[in-house]
Length: 333
Ligand code: NAD
Image (cartoon, rainbow, N blue to C red; front, side, top):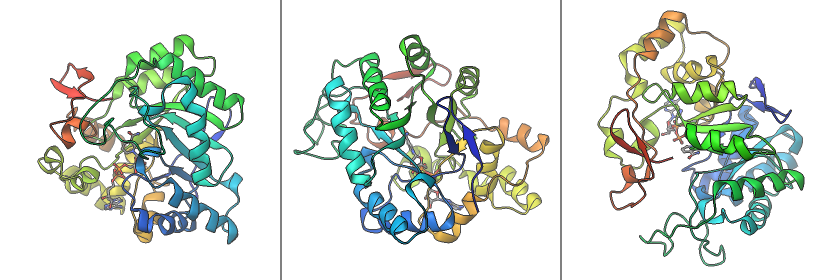
C-alpha cells in the first residue's frame, strides 16, 4: 500500500496520506512509527510540542537499519513551536529537532501557530508548552510573523528544510505571508473535517498554489481523548448516519469515507492510530470515489465547529487570539 503524492510549489512530491504523531505515547512511539512504516506510511507529521520526536527518530532509525526504507523514501514533517519564533532561535531549535529525529533535513518544516511566545530555554523545559512558567503565565514575544518566516527561509537556504509551510493560519495571515515571502509556503495545515470545512481558506490556498493538509479528519474523535466537552457533546462523525450509509454503500469504513472526502478534494490527510490494522485501513483511502450526491450531503454537515483551540482544553488559557465572526466562537489559530 502506498499513498499517491502531491506536487508542492517547492518542486518536491509529498505523500497525500501521512501519519499523525500528536498524542502518541512516548513509551509506544518508536514501535508505532516503525509499524506505520511497515504498513506503508512514508509521511510522518511531528512537532516539538508533541514531546516524542526522539522516539519518532528511534522508530525511523530502526526501520532504516532493518532495510524497510531509506531516508529518501520518507517525508518527515516537523513544526516550529511558539517559543522559538525569534530569528536567532529558529535554526538552533530546528537543529535540535533534526538531531532528535536522527536526520539531517526535514522534508517540510511548519510554523505551528502564528503566535510568538517568550523564549524558554530547552535546557529548562522541553517541550516548553504554552506557559512561560510551565503553569499558567502567558508571555508574548515581540517576534513578528515576518521575522519568523525570514528565519524559516534560511532553513531552506541552509539545507535544513526542503520545504517550509504554515499551520493554523487564517486567510489574513496567509495573505500577509505572501506579501514578504521570498520562498512561498508550500503547505497550509489546518483543522478540517465535515464539521469544520474551511471552504474559503481552501479556495484561497488553491488559488495561491499552497497544498492544504487537513488535520483531525475525524473531528471530535481525537479530542474526546482530551476529555473536551465540545467534542463529547456532538455526534461522532464515524457514527453519523450519513457517513455510515456511505460507508456501507462503498464497502468501506466510516473512517475511510471521512478521509476520502478530504483526499477526493485534493487535500492531504494525516490520521493517527496506534493499531496496525487500522493504520493500513486509513492509508487505503484514495482508491475509491464518493459520488456527487455523497459530496453534496457532506457539504451540508458543516457546523463551523472547531475543536483545536486552547480554551476548549481549559478555560484558564488566556489565549483568545482570533475571532471567527460567523459562529461567534473564539477561534484559536
Ligand atoms: P485524528 O482525527 O487522526 O483522530 C485520531 C483518533 O481517531 C484516535 O482516537 C484514533 O484511535 C481514532 N481512529 C483513527 N483511525 C480510526 C479508524 N479507522 N477507525 C476508528 N477510529 C480511528 O486526530 P488528531 O490526532 O487530532 O489529528 C491527526 C494528526 O494531525 C495529529 O496526530 C497531528 O499530527 C496533526 N495535528 C496537527 C495540529 C496542528 O496544530 N497543526 C493539531 C492537531 C492535529
